[in-house]
Length: 259
Image (cartoon, rainbow, N blue to C red; front, side, top):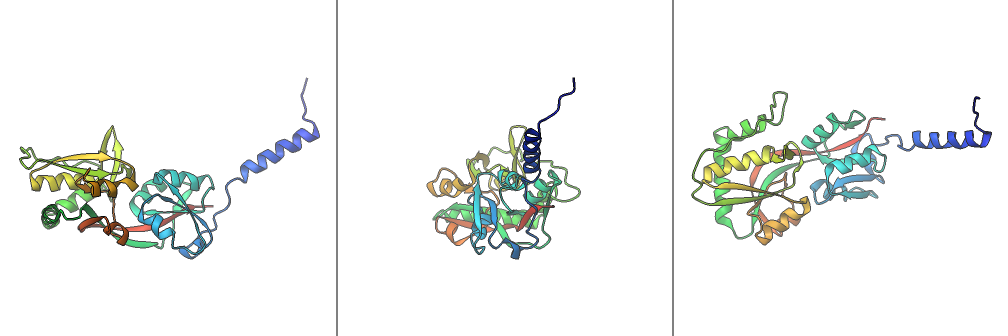
């Protein structure tokens, strides 16, 4: 016998269906000016989170991972996400319902954090970075992770005795292509760069993964020698740690839903 719904049941089902279909609001952010009064998702402790706080009347929702902020955007819980351009590209490539707005939100430069007062280490790393820039090693490392020809092949350290000990690097492996987890290992531009730095310094690199907003504290307390995680130099961070010269220029961008 054919079953039929009562009028009340049918209307209830229709209401549920319409609610589900309309649960994700249409995108209303088409430029940085449209962020005024909106809800913005950001990874906690990042410069994107800091810059979002300057947007007039905006509500900033913090997330422990950039991926969580992007998921909230897909679900309609936030109106936009502010994040660095390279991880933004990775997230958008995996989510065809999202897009990056064409105009950059702000530009910044990444540097390596080290403990205040440890100027000897800072100078050694600075000199190593200068060497890696001049001999093309840093550019070659970056080319393996960014661009149409990227093959995601990691830098292989030289076979040395590491007579100068170990260098502990604090990072957050949620920031591709600078650092992410692959096969149980942390890989990416920052890790490869620091392996190359350690080759120059004749040291062994030890990578410690932690929450992003714990990195500066780890360096300040001495639990880590350096913080390398797409860190840009800000006045607040400089109160607690020192920074080397920059090694990469990045752009904070805005991710929104396409529709």
